[in-house]
Length: 187
Image 1 (cartoon, rainbow, N blue to C red):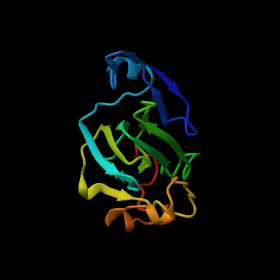
Image 2 (cartoon, rainbow, N blue to C red):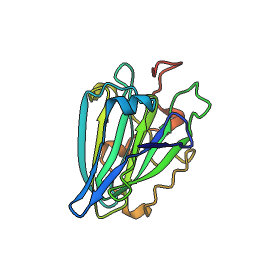
Image 3 (cartoon, rainbow, N blue to C red):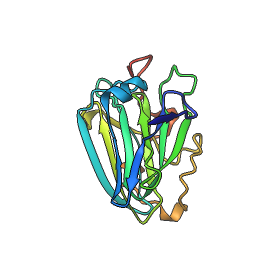
Image 4 (cartoon, helix red, strand yellow):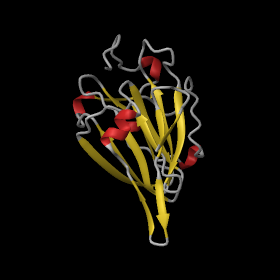
């Protein structure tokens, strides 16, 4: 396994060691001691999986403290553009994001720490997306940022007429109007 730096140092791109032969392939998607050695010290409490079709855009989602989440995300089938947006008000990279293509082919994982909003756009016909969370889903703590916030100017790599959103994702505010905690409460 190796770690590739991203535009925001706390967000880590993980390239697992993949062992393949005529039977297929094998990889470790999580190994506590190896990931801890790489600075990912999470106690995962929930695994999630979603299946979506081309054009689906999920996000940008986050949860308020004390239910805020770190996530380790990957694609099992298909391809997405994955976004981690820094929403820590005291951070030098506040309002900046990292965009990474995750696919079944490249097998990359993305570690998204607490204090980041997360979203992805499906770029393949379908996608199976899996992720670990270090805090359970808590509907009352759930928040979001508008995917099309002009101040963020995220290129989701989808034509505007092909974007498919949930009703909830159509109502998120821009970052400047978002409900964010003050200070370092993301820890």
